[in-house]
Image (tube, rainbow, N blue to C red):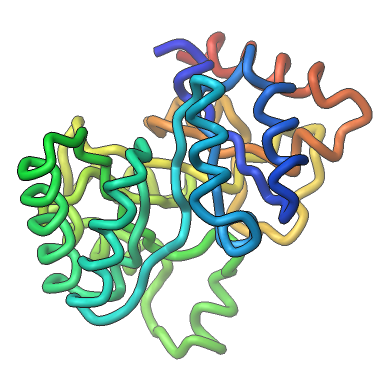
Length: 240
């Protein structure tokens, strides 16, 4: 898979005009752009349409987490937007994940829509093992927890998970080769970690088996962002 197809660029801004400028600026290196909470709350579905009009795909990163009826209902609305993929929290439970998958499949078949990939969020990459244990109250490791949630998502029929590069092997052990792993917290060796804790370089993540790598701030905060994304692309291709 070309680097252009493995990269997801995070539009971590709240101005839709700026977001679309970023899409155009990096369109030569990236095919999929991530719309998160900040941008979606500010701009709504219109920014998704704007990205589609520029010939690009959308990963709608809203991390839905609620009762099954609410999440599955929201998922139908998202399917109507024709995004490439969207995510829900695996910690919402098996019933929530299964209901969402079934509802989306039925809705897309009924309305002749392309089914978006449904991705489960495991443990946020901003959380350290110490925080996971002391603040969240879990006694086992993050890797064990991610493995459990990934297994649930796989059995629920979802298409993949969001997981840090450190948990890729654990996810593969309980799923199959077709199960998608999206890895955020990608930080080249020359970029600062920001608020991410469980980070990994592009080459390390590719070697471990990540299907998609999420970049954003690590590129935009560089003196020459275009050069940064080019270097990351080269690193991905040399590691594939």
